[in-house]
Image (cartoon, helix red, strand yellow):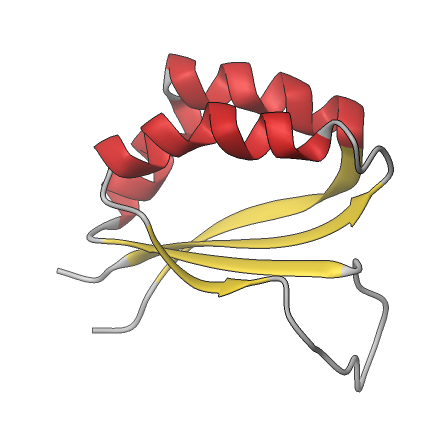
Length: 96
């Protein structure tokens, strides 16, 4: 079974509020077995436009990745995130 991934590009606009998002999202990530492969850090944009913060999260399956995003706990966190940042999240299926 192919793994599922969240790929996010984020611009934090309210840095004092963003830690609340991280704390609120943590239980959902733990419940669905999320593994952070990339979470911020140094980067170099070599083509196109992108956010300032990059995140890649691995899940055991596409179904788990979607279930985590759609669960009530994460949606509560997402409301905080959208008030503290702008960006994109794409959920993709990995290669087997």
